[in-house]
Image: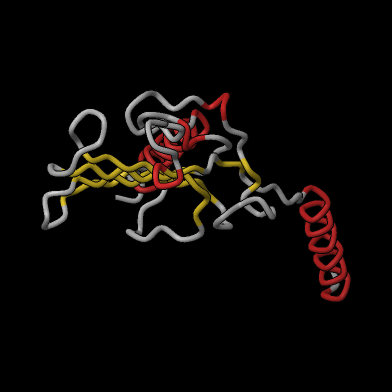
Length: 167
């Protein structure tokens, strides 16, 4: 095969693949709940600090839209609870739900927690699925589990069929 014919075929193939990929691209913004116990009125719990979060009272916002207080590409939920202070049940507790752009702790798709020096317990969860910050605890996306399983299987098979025969 002539080199110029080969180059022409490769160029045509690359253009075709790029065209197919671009035609299937679509911009999808994630939707997250946004609320804060700081904005709740006295004796109200709209953000789920003391009772289960009632998602039917809230509308998830488009994280790239004008309604989002913080634009972002994934959802965020923060809980803080202190040993001192007094609100209805004698504990101090704060919940924030919003969109997030960058994970402050370098994690995504999971939760991180700890204690500040003053004894306040904190928990931060990040997720990238519509309405995922409504949960009381972190939910795992079925797609993530499938991808993890497939990656593990492919890695094992490549080890068995490619690396073992080379020994």
